[in-house]
Image (cartoon, rainbow, N blue to C red):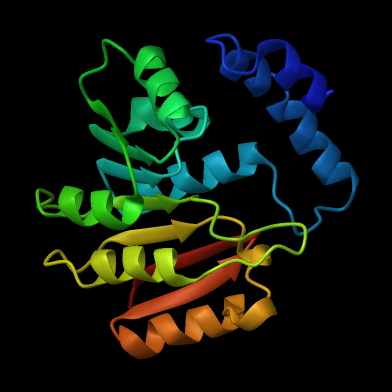
Length: 209
């Protein structure tokens, strides 16, 4: 069904809405299967909202807009939303989808450049959702470089208490010379001792100590 949905509606304004209809069935199927490692998108949305509320954050910054599903889920809970998307078509689709909402900015380009540029104008604590496809699936070689550049920019920022959530922690397997999730967590805590890292429900969570 996901393949058929994408074939019929992919690239259109209807696709995000049709795709979102599958979030609840996906969630209940996940529960019925005993809550396996891969978390459904609905749970990820709830996690983002939970951390935003817990740390009283009003700025949301996302890497990996895709079809704007996370933005749509959280837009009522943040005063300012920034989302970076490398793919020009997806960025354009997101701009059309959220046109007329001045609190939302879609930034097109490489997050290694766009994120530091964005951070230069950020003066308060923010919640970061990093979902930029850092892991290459199906035995393809991935790279830690882009994620590490993003993390360095965030965690070295003059505002010292940003909260960072990284999606698809299960994809950090340590294969092909890349860091495993545990190694990445240890590196973050070693390089930034004022931070602590937890891995839960396929999300790597970085918060202040």
